[in-house]
Amino acid sequence: MSDHHEDHNHGFSHVMSPGILLGTFAVLIVMTIVTVLLADSELIPKGFDVHVALTIATIKAAFVMLFFMHMIYDKPLNTIFFLFSIVFVSLFLGFAMTDTEQYQHRIDEFNYNEVETTP
Image (cartoon, rainbow, N blue to C red):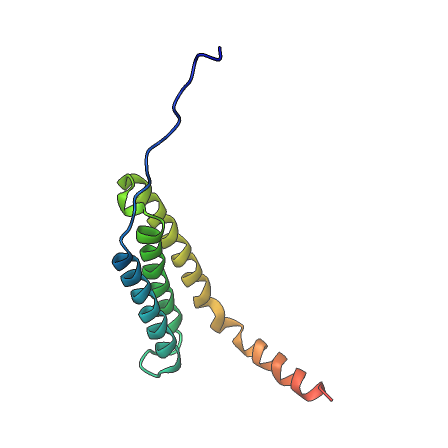
C-alpha cells in the first residue's frame, strides 16, 4: 500500500499580470468615484439613483469576478452561473427599493418625532 502514490497536483493557477490587476483596480476606483458623484448630483431623477448605483455595483462585481477571482480563465458555464446570480440579486434589491416611497412619510414622521423628544 505504501508503494502506491498518486500525484494530486492540479497544476499552477492562472497568473495575472500586474498591469491587468492594477488596471482592474483603477477601473473599480473610477466606478466608485462615479457612483459617489452621481449620488450627490441632480443629474439622475429621484428614485432612479438607486437603480443606477446598483447597475454600477453589478458591473464592478463582474470585474472583480472576472479578474480578481480569475473566472475569465474558467469554464464559461461557471461564469454564466455567477453572473446570473449577481444580476438576480441586484434586480431583487432594485425592485425591493422601488417600494420605499410607500412608507417614506412614516420614516420622516418618526425622525421628526425623535428630534422633538431628544433633550
